Each structure stands twice: as structure tokens, then as C-alpha cells.
Length: 222
Ligand code: SAM
Image 1 (cartoon, helix red, strand yellow):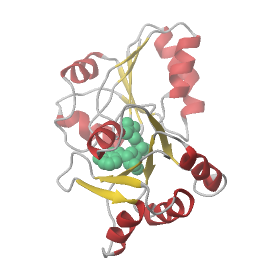
Image 2 (spheres, rainbow, N blue to C red):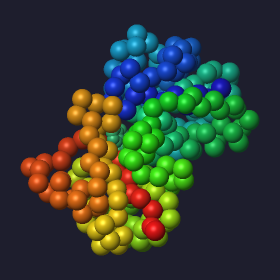
Image 3 (spheres, rainbow, N blue to C red):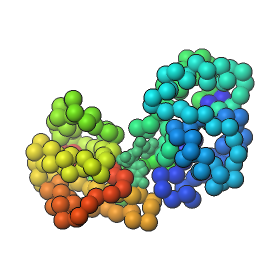
């Protein structure tokens, strides 16, 4: 059995009872950064063997984990924060498990884009989740495409690139497109900046620095 277990995106109380129970019951926990996850498990009083499973080693690790699963062990996959497989490793392991008739059980739980979307005040009935944009090659093409979409779209963006991202969006979608920047969700400094793309950029320009984790929500093309 392979379990996908969401972990908090900030507030440590955002973990389900089932997630804790599952982590207590599995034989092995696959984690992006074993130090980060080790601290998290310790917080909940869970002591389990941890094995690293991240973007740079997931291809090399899949076969050995399949063997563990085929021997009858229960394995949980977690990421540093949020839901595995959402802009985080997960897909490859799920595909491999399914291809070998190993059941995959995904627990519902914390993820950054859902609270960002539903609190944004922008239409949430239909939406497009983009996640991270490419940094260089293909970035402009992707942004052009996003600006044509009729539905709200969501981006994960780093604080270092957010101003560049907003400037590019202003150029391609126009300055008056409604948007919302959700920062540090569930943490002490949680913040929502709502307005047009231009207004959000002006707000950021007025600050000495931009820190924290960011989801950018942009309304669809009219
Ligand atoms: N698996 C995670 C999820 O389910 O949302 C996403 C992991 S991805 C590597 C990290 C990105 O998610 C951050 O750069 C940011 O864009 C977004 N993110 C994660 N935690 C966040 C938070 N507390 N507030 C705002 N955005 C967050």
C-alpha cells in the first residue's frame, strides 16, 4: 500500500487525525528532505524510518521502493509541505505503484492553492492550476497562454521572481486584470493583497523587501 499524506503548509495544526494515524502505522516514510520531515514527525511524536525521495533522486529510487511495497510493507510519501504530487514529487511513484497493481491511497489535506483560491474573491467555480512557471525557456509562451484563459488561474511563485512575474502579466494580460497575491498562508504573517495586477505590483514596489511563500491568483480573460 502506498499512502500519499499531506502535511501542513505552515500551521502545524493543519494535519488530519487520519494523516497522523497513517504515519504512525506505516513501515517507511518517504520524504523530500528527511531533516524537515524528521522534525515534523517528532512534533507529532512519531518515530519512523525516513528515506529521502526528491526531484533529484526519485527516478533512481522508484525500483527499490517498489520492492519494499511488493514485500507487503506500507509506505507513506510526504513532501516538505502540502500535498505530495502538487508541484512536488509524487506522480512518478504513483504511476509506478499503479503499473504494478499496488493500491494507492491519497489522504485529503493541506495544499496551498485551495485556501488561496477560495479566499481570493475571484471566481472559483472553474480554475486552472499552473503551479511553477519555467524560469527561462518557455516562460513567455506559457504566460501568453494563461492570459487567454477564460477562467481564474493560479501560479506558485518565489518572492524573488514575483515582481518580474507581475510585470510580465501586466504586459500580456493588461494592467487592469483582477488578481490576488496570497502570501504566507496559515502562518503568522498571512496576507492577501487584492486588486488589479498593476495595483498589486505598486504595493510590492512600495516595500523594502518581499519575503515568504506566494500563490498568485489571476482572474480569467473577459
Ligand atoms: N505541495 C505543495 C502544495 O500542496 O501546495 C506545494 C509545494 S511547492 C514546492 C512550494 C510552493 O507552494 C511555494 O513556493 C508557494 O508558491 C506555495 N506555498 C506553499 N506553502 C505556502 C504558504 N504557506 N503560503 C503561500 N504559498 C505557499
